[in-house]
Amino acid sequence: MSIADVISFDNTEVAFKSKSDKELKRDYRLFKLLSYPWLARTGAKMTAVLLKAGLPVAGIIRKTIYEHFCGGETLAECQKTIDELAASGVYSILDYGVEAKNNEADFDHTAAEMIREIDFASENDFVPLISCKMTGLGRFELYEKVQQGDRLTAEEEKEFNRIRERLEKVCRHASENNVSVSIDAEESWIQEPVDKLTHEMMEKFNRGRVVVMNTAQMYRKDRLDFLKDAVAEALRKGYLYGIKLVRGAYMDKERARARAMKYPSPIHETKSECDHDFDEAVRFCIDHYEKVYTCVATHNEASCKLFVNLIEDKKLDKQHPHLLCCQLYGMSDHITFNLAERGFRAAKYVPYGPVREVLPYLTRRAEENTSVAGQMSRELQLYKTEMTRRGL
Figure (cartoon, rainbow, N blue to C red):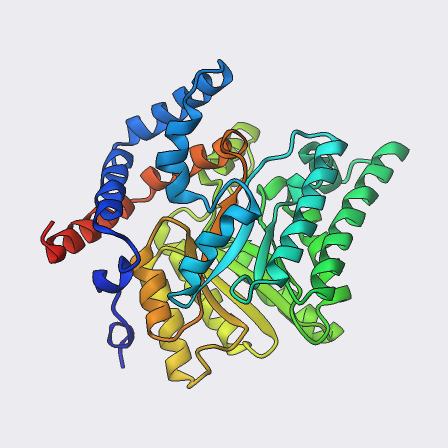
């Protein structure tokens, strides 16, 4: 059986069944605008300037790009989004999209919000995971200093211990409330301490079920070996491993830094090399599904079909709690909803937070969407197909 025989992502009736005709046409217009890279980039930056100047553009943002890519300004507002997704059998992964301001009070606030997320998720059967960004719990520069092996001052040692304490408090609360925490990946030059802290929490809490998950950016040349070694260590030490597989978020920044500082780029030279490692990671994780909770987080149709094909070939339970495929809220509905329709565990990554505070996230989303070859044209094609089917 070929991969294509298992599932098709072309069924737009399933993909857009929750959208009214008005919503469908509105979202088509939004993607049409995002299909122009120069407009997406300059529009996002101009919006930030206008907001900073105090001009009343927040309402326009909320009714357009914000509503499309975010679940709401508060957890309570997210409930409607969660319920709508759950009606189609789709899970939600909550992410507090507000970026910390780089001081201790903000880091404490972010940790407290994660505790609130866990409490909220524990009351929602369709919210199995929350997302945690370690740069929301501590200073980027401190992680960088730790990775470089520089000697920390006494105050910096205390500061780093506070990061560990915040993370442990969040993970412990998740463990006590039957929720899991997915730790986001960061830039390569601060990833080592993030991995170390994540593995510490895994060893402590991933006993019996997966509470803590790491993230591997598979565009890095070393991540496939890293993943295999990390799983082997978990098996030796007797704890379960959790991993979210992504292709990566900082490619241009990584390559520019490597050139400027004259060291070999950690990023694969070609997309095919990245695709190879991503799919090998999917195969490896599903081979070890009983001990590894895998979240395949991608908009790549071939990788999603591979995920499905492996589950079918191995005759695994489609609803096994260690098998999850995820896409961003507001994108690739043709993947998410068709997976759920066929009985697989599918999820949307749902960011939330005040419009003004989530703008940096939305800016990146707009820029990333326009940089992925074929992404916008595929989205537009699907919307056109569904509008034609409905006679719009």
